[in-house]
Structures are given as C-alpha cells and as structure tokens.
Amino acid sequence: MKIDFEKMNGLVPAIIQDAKTKNVLMLGYMNEMAYKTTLETKQVTFWSRSRNCLWTKGETSGNKLELVSINVDCDNDTLLVKVHPTGPVCHTGSDTCWQESNNNISFLSELQDFISKRYEEMPEKSYTTSLFKDGINRMAQKVGEEAVEMVIEATNGTNERLVYECSDLIYHMIVLLTSKGLTINDVIKELEIRHNPSWHKH
Image (cartoon, rainbow, N blue to C red; front, side, top):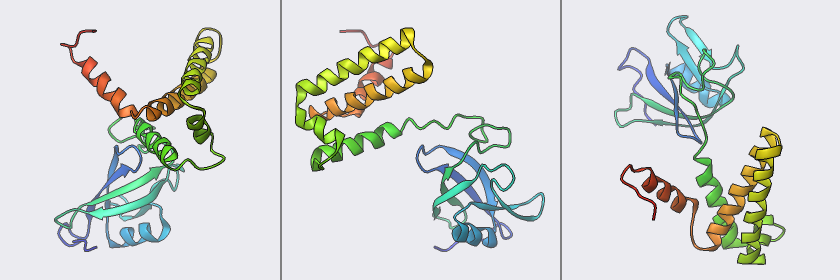
C-alpha cells in the first residue's frame, strides 16, 4: 500500500470508522511514524499537530481505538481506518466528534447472517438448530411466549429485564422468519414503506 505522505508536508488525514456500525467517529492525522506505530501496536496512533508529537488515542482516557484495517484512497493521500472503539471517542464524552450516537443497529444484519448460516449447516448442539428441527409450530410458540414475557416485564418488571425479554423476542422472531424463507430485512423494508407519509394501512 503506497501512501503519499509528502503531499501535505508529511501528514495524511485518517478517517476513523467503527468497523461494526460503519459510523465515522473522528478525523485525525498520521505521519509515517504514526502509521507504522498503529500497524505494530494495533492501537490507532496519530501525529498531534498542536503538541508536535505522536499520540495514541486513549493513552490518558482509556478510550482506545483497536485497529481492524487501514485502506488508502484512490489518490494515496487519505486513510480509512476501521476500528473497534472502547468507550466514547470524543473528548467531550460523545460517541463521535460530531456529537452523534454510535449505535449498532446494523448488528441485526449480522445476527440474521448467523441464524441463516445455522439454518444451512444445522450444527449439532446448537440451540438455534434445535429450534429449526422442532418445526414451525414450536418456533411460533416460542415467539408467542417471549412476547408475553416482554409484556409482563413492561408492566410489572424492570427496564433491565424488559431489554432482556425484547432481545429474546427479536432473536426468536428472526429464527421464525428464516424458517419461512424471510429475513429481518423484509421487515425493515415493510417499515420503510410504512414510514412514507402516503402509506395507508391495508
């Protein structure tokens, strides 16, 4: 990978992106030493223009950026650095330097892929496999049971248990969808249609 450090007097912009959520977290600058240090330590390191020295993100706050990959753009003068962040990225305490939330809603697609793979391979001693083998009636029953448990926690339980039961419900719902040849993306598409102001209930 060839990087043109000379174009901007030894520095290149480094766009920091969460490898899971795909959200842009911050922008920093790297010189050749910062780039090499990042590759060697797997901890994202920048060149601080104000302090005129190397700076590893999180060395004081503990909110480090674990390196996943680095790619250079078509002009060889800008880096896309994919990371796993530990804690907020911005010094203000925000998830990003643009005061945005770095939520991981895209994990639903990752979960869908995992469940689909289970459906294809049917590995032994897997809970997901056992659900598929039990058949559609049992899967539908599990969705109903989890929905009831969610309602109970919503009306008489704690927020922590409500989130727990909601997670169970979503998981079993994706299993049921998969068994019917559908995915969570089909549900998302339907919700997108309903979000249109011109949508009317059937």
